[in-house]
Length: 230
Image 1 (cartoon, rainbow, N blue to C red):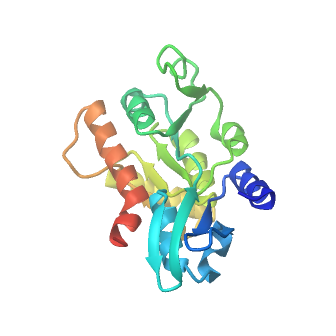
Image 2 (cartoon, rainbow, N blue to C red; image 1 turned 180 degrees about the horizontal axis):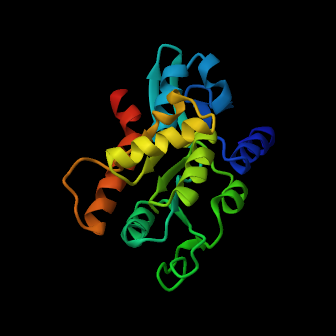
């Protein structure tokens, strides 16, 4: 790989932006395609497919045969609420490769003893979330049932283009939540992105079952676009 391509790739990776190194199999020529430039690239369709799936691979195209080396940021899961569901959800998400962070200002709940091997931040969302650099490769789950914690956290997640946003609560609870967030100036289009009641509808009852439903919904949101392109 040429030094200029490597340097540009490292810049994109440091900024948590996806990029693909395109290698022409016939000539061995390489070029870097940044995520922002995919839409205008001659290989747009195959590049989009590989960015969504996060997988490298060979592609036969009308322009020739190419190997696409895909670089996408590590997917993250940010949770507000150091609750029982989080205790089940965090280790499951880590097994799937997510970088997990839990935010909860209630120090009696947000402890390393309750969440071993997970980053726990015992601060209010308006303090804890901005430094995390939440982005499109972040899934967000609001699980506290406390508007003082979940509402500002959801507002931040919506402003940061998270690929998944979910919130615990009944339909009535969520309707009241939507009213509060609308009063904060958040549009109906943005609010429609919140999955609530959170998780797949599998009749989950226990914290562990709810965690399975949530992680299933997150996985579907992450992968479903790639599946449609196959």
